[in-house]
Length: 369
Image (cartoon, rainbow, N blue to C red; front, top):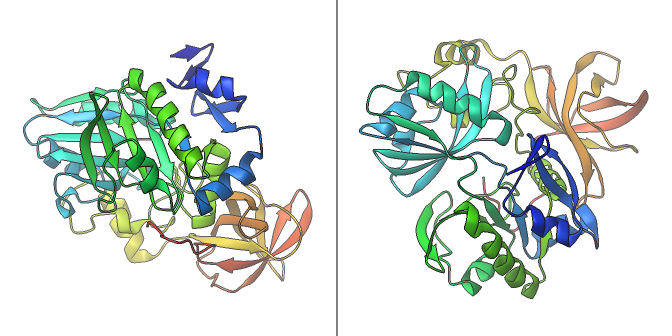
């Protein structure tokens, strides 16, 4: 659904009614935070109880036909042969130079049916690349506005699903195809917060009723509706990459430390030759975390220097950590940098001291990674 230049989720009116602060995310008008505490309260709810997010701006696409799994496996970086039907996998769509067009989740329904959830802004490009490469008999379909996506995250997330009669407790990165009030629903044990959680994929016109039921069940557990502001602080505390920041067409999986999502033993996938060569030679820059020891909140593109003034790289994401009560950042730095190094971040012309750390920045009750 469109709202002027921006598309809106099936829950748009729900967010407006709750008084949410809205903003543009990948061409979609989505909630940043809700009244009554904002990002910090919503972040804390996820770490201590449960939060419910609307992430319906995420893309949805299907690849169907005889040999669909093998076709997707020859295109995307991770190895679908590592999983079986009923499992989901984090994977990457790379270009010929090894840069990341998008990072996405692949749901393996069967050898002939793969469901993909790309990032909002990149869905069209991923779909067009797959369509162009698809052999006869393989159908690639953009289903972006056919489904909603709701995320239930936090230590009480199982109780929320159980209150709705939904399956819970299945293995991490596995999904169950079920029904809610007679409507098809996918319930997957995934998330972007580091906490135990689920992502639910209902049909577009079912999402609003499901949201209402989830919010009611979450409030009974001390939970809250959560906006994308809290989603960003939560993922940054865990060191999870965000496309356009830690991953891009100019930033490779090797540089971003997501080489674990590459099927290095596969004969073919987009960008393979460039990535194999970079891995062998060693990357020119590497992802690290930074914990601020002075006063200041780093932001994207802030320059990072050594204590002696040597240029080391730049911040890719920065925020205030509600858990640590201090500034944290993710950065791409020179390969000579090591954990524990003291560095300086240029925050609006002011030097802010920080220490290099390998994420996550916080240890959570049930880390999902």
